[in-house]
Image (cartoon, rainbow, N blue to C red; front, top):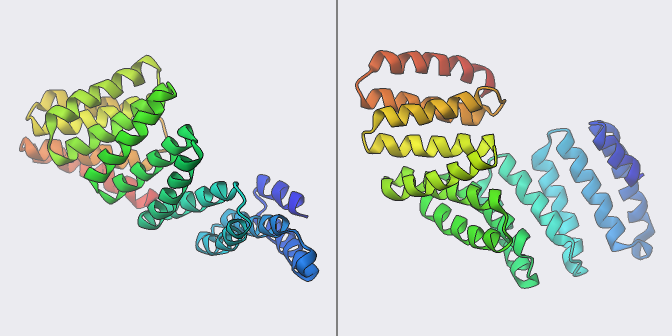
Length: 274
């Protein structure tokens, strides 16, 4: 039934998956001490994923805590994967402080186990959460740690993403020289790798920094590049961020009419996607 529940989730049949996972859970409960703790945890995890498929994320997070508790008690190493799942779900519903707490627990386990790549990836996830909270010093601190580990593994794109986060944080803090230097480095890797998402976010960070320097033409050029890349995607959050930077750019220059035009278009979009 657990395997059937997994197949149902793959087919986006959340209700069917939930019914199967709950029935499997009841069977294991009826077995008492004869039931394997791993099987019980798998059944609970299956219920959690089914609830997530049904967009009942708060319930899914509460349910997966039961699986985590069982796996912790049994000292099973794959508790890390379950913790990471919980953290990603918390991040997905905007509970960034809670997500950071769980991710940092995973980071600590990975560090002890010597899992360099996973250690870095989880630190990068923490960096993302801090960026959402606008905690720029923490962004720089955790991105720098992640970068060091990614560099050891020669993971080029991941190093550049760390640089992008650092550049954006420095731009938000008004430290333009660092923002431009590190932002260009991230952009160049994105260009070399033809990584459009990386180029888009790096261009956005550079555009912010150029505004602070009052280099408005350079800023508009970089923001326009970010806009062109993002316009072919469904990344509405990034599109909104770019348009807000255009509004700021035009207002700083006293181009009120241009800013109003962008704001009007932005409101039309936000009415649909937010």
